[in-house]
Image 1 (cartoon, rainbow, N blue to C red):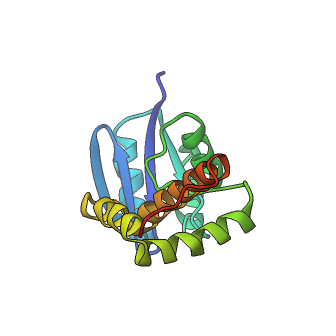
Image 2: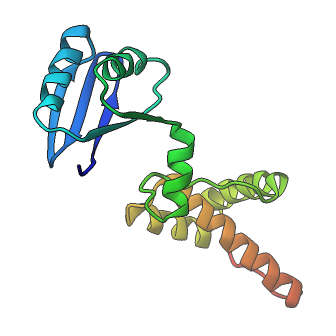
Amino acid sequence: MTTIYAGLDIAKLNLQLHWDGRIHDLPNTAAGHRRLLKLLASQPGVHIVCEATGGYERDVVAALHQASVPVSVLNPARVRHFARATGQWHGRRSIGGGRAPVRRALYMAALVAARSNRQLKEFYQRLRAAGKPAKVALTAVMRKLIVLMNHILKNPNFALQN
Protein backbone atom coordinates (compact mmCIF):
# COMPACT_ATOMS: atom_id res chain seq x y z
CA MET A 1 0.00 0.00 0.00
CA THR A 2 1.30 3.46 -0.92
CA THR A 3 1.51 6.03 1.87
CA ILE A 4 -0.10 9.38 1.14
CA TYR A 5 1.03 12.27 3.33
CA ALA A 6 -1.46 14.96 4.30
CA GLY A 7 -0.68 18.16 6.17
CA LEU A 8 -2.85 19.26 9.05
CA ASP A 9 -2.64 22.90 10.18
CA ILE A 10 -3.95 23.19 13.70
CA ALA A 11 -5.18 26.31 15.44
CA LYS A 12 -7.18 26.88 18.62
CA LEU A 13 -10.53 26.98 16.84
CA ASN A 14 -10.01 25.21 13.51
CA LEU A 15 -8.17 22.53 11.57
CA GLN A 16 -7.10 22.79 7.96
CA LEU A 17 -6.41 19.52 6.17
CA HIS A 18 -4.20 19.84 3.07
CA TRP A 19 -4.72 16.64 1.16
CA ASP A 20 -4.95 15.54 -2.44
CA GLY A 21 -4.61 19.11 -3.76
CA ARG A 22 -7.55 20.34 -1.70
CA ILE A 23 -7.98 22.19 1.57
CA HIS A 24 -10.63 21.04 4.03
CA ASP A 25 -11.59 23.46 6.82
CA LEU A 26 -12.89 21.82 9.99
CA PRO A 27 -13.57 23.01 13.52
CA ASN A 28 -11.07 21.91 16.18
CA THR A 29 -13.79 20.18 18.19
CA ALA A 30 -14.86 16.58 18.77
CA ALA A 31 -17.34 16.94 15.87
CA GLY A 32 -14.58 18.31 13.62
CA HIS A 33 -12.33 15.40 14.60
CA ARG A 34 -15.06 12.94 13.63
CA ARG A 35 -15.47 14.69 10.25
CA LEU A 36 -11.69 14.50 9.75
CA LEU A 37 -11.70 10.75 10.45
CA LYS A 38 -14.61 10.29 8.05
CA LEU A 39 -12.69 12.13 5.31
CA LEU A 40 -9.57 10.04 5.94
CA ALA A 41 -11.54 6.77 5.90
CA SER A 42 -12.33 7.34 2.22
CA GLN A 43 -8.73 6.53 1.27
CA PRO A 44 -6.51 4.06 3.13
CA GLY A 45 -2.83 4.73 3.67
CA VAL A 46 -3.04 8.42 4.63
CA HIS A 47 -0.36 9.59 7.07
CA ILE A 48 -1.09 12.90 8.82
CA VAL A 49 1.77 15.33 9.44
CA CYS A 50 1.26 18.32 11.74
CA GLU A 51 3.27 20.74 13.86
CA ALA A 52 3.07 20.94 17.62
CA THR A 53 0.96 24.03 18.33
CA GLY A 54 1.16 24.66 22.04
CA GLY A 55 -1.22 21.86 22.96
CA TYR A 56 -3.99 22.61 20.45
CA GLU A 57 -2.98 19.44 18.59
CA ARG A 58 -3.40 17.04 21.51
CA ASP A 59 -7.08 16.16 21.13
CA VAL A 60 -6.99 15.66 17.36
CA VAL A 61 -3.79 13.59 17.60
CA ALA A 62 -5.41 11.43 20.28
CA ALA A 63 -8.46 10.93 18.02
CA LEU A 64 -6.20 9.98 15.09
CA HIS A 65 -4.23 7.51 17.25
CA GLN A 66 -7.46 5.97 18.57
CA ALA A 67 -8.62 5.46 14.97
CA SER A 68 -5.21 3.92 14.06
CA VAL A 69 -4.41 6.70 11.59
CA PRO A 70 -0.63 7.26 11.39
CA VAL A 71 0.29 10.73 12.58
CA SER A 72 3.59 12.56 12.99
CA VAL A 73 3.80 15.64 15.22
CA LEU A 74 6.79 17.77 14.27
CA ASN A 75 8.66 20.39 16.25
CA PRO A 76 8.12 23.76 14.43
CA ALA A 77 11.70 24.88 15.13
CA ARG A 78 13.08 21.75 13.47
CA VAL A 79 10.77 22.26 10.47
CA ARG A 80 12.00 25.86 10.04
CA HIS A 81 15.62 24.73 10.40
CA PHE A 82 15.08 22.03 7.76
CA ALA A 83 13.37 24.52 5.41
CA ARG A 84 16.28 26.96 5.75
CA ALA A 85 18.86 24.21 5.26
CA THR A 86 17.19 22.97 2.08
CA GLY A 87 16.56 26.45 0.65
CA GLN A 88 12.79 26.17 0.97
CA TRP A 89 12.33 28.89 3.61
CA HIS A 90 9.94 31.62 2.45
CA GLY A 91 9.77 33.70 5.63
CA ARG A 92 11.74 36.74 6.61
CA ARG A 93 15.43 36.40 7.14
CA SER A 94 17.09 37.44 10.36
CA ILE A 95 20.63 38.19 11.37
CA GLY A 96 22.15 35.67 13.72
CA GLY A 97 25.61 35.44 15.19
CA GLY A 98 28.24 37.99 14.33
CA ARG A 99 29.18 40.89 16.55
CA ALA A 100 26.06 42.29 18.17
CA PRO A 101 27.77 45.35 19.75
CA VAL A 102 29.11 46.38 16.33
CA ARG A 103 25.64 45.87 14.79
CA ARG A 104 24.02 48.01 17.48
CA ALA A 105 26.56 50.83 17.00
CA LEU A 106 26.19 50.69 13.21
CA TYR A 107 22.40 50.68 13.50
CA MET A 108 22.39 53.93 15.47
CA ALA A 109 24.95 55.51 13.14
CA ALA A 110 22.91 54.45 10.08
CA LEU A 111 19.72 55.80 11.64
CA VAL A 112 21.32 59.22 12.14
CA ALA A 113 23.00 59.16 8.72
CA ALA A 114 19.76 58.21 6.93
CA ARG A 115 18.11 61.26 8.47
CA SER A 116 20.84 63.87 8.33
CA ASN A 117 23.40 63.04 5.60
CA ARG A 118 22.09 64.18 2.22
CA GLN A 119 23.63 61.36 0.16
CA LEU A 120 22.76 58.56 2.57
CA LYS A 121 19.28 60.02 3.09
CA GLU A 122 18.68 59.94 -0.68
CA PHE A 123 20.02 56.36 -0.82
CA TYR A 124 17.69 55.30 2.02
CA GLN A 125 14.67 57.04 0.47
CA ARG A 126 15.40 55.48 -2.94
CA LEU A 127 15.37 52.00 -1.37
CA ARG A 128 12.12 52.73 0.50
CA ALA A 129 10.53 54.08 -2.72
CA ALA A 130 11.53 50.81 -4.42
CA GLY A 131 9.45 48.94 -1.84
CA LYS A 132 12.19 47.79 0.54
CA PRO A 133 11.15 47.47 4.19
CA ALA A 134 12.59 50.14 6.50
CA LYS A 135 14.92 47.72 8.31
CA VAL A 136 16.27 46.35 5.03
CA ALA A 137 16.95 49.87 3.75
CA LEU A 138 18.61 50.78 7.05
CA THR A 139 20.77 47.64 6.87
CA ALA A 140 21.88 48.76 3.40
CA VAL A 141 22.84 52.13 4.87
CA MET A 142 24.80 50.27 7.57
CA ARG A 143 26.71 48.38 4.91
CA LYS A 144 27.35 51.58 2.96
CA LEU A 145 28.76 53.12 6.16
CA ILE A 146 31.19 50.20 6.50
CA VAL A 147 32.28 50.63 2.88
CA LEU A 148 32.78 54.37 3.48
CA MET A 149 34.78 53.74 6.68
CA ASN A 150 37.04 51.29 4.84
CA HIS A 151 37.52 53.88 2.08
CA ILE A 152 38.44 56.54 4.68
CA LEU A 153 41.02 54.18 6.21
CA LYS A 154 42.64 53.74 2.79
CA ASN A 155 42.31 57.44 1.85
CA PRO A 156 42.64 59.65 4.97
CA ASN A 157 41.95 62.85 2.97
CA PHE A 158 38.54 61.60 1.73
CA ALA A 159 35.50 63.52 2.95
CA LEU A 160 31.85 62.71 2.31
CA GLN A 161 30.03 65.84 1.20
CA ASN A 162 26.81 66.55 3.04
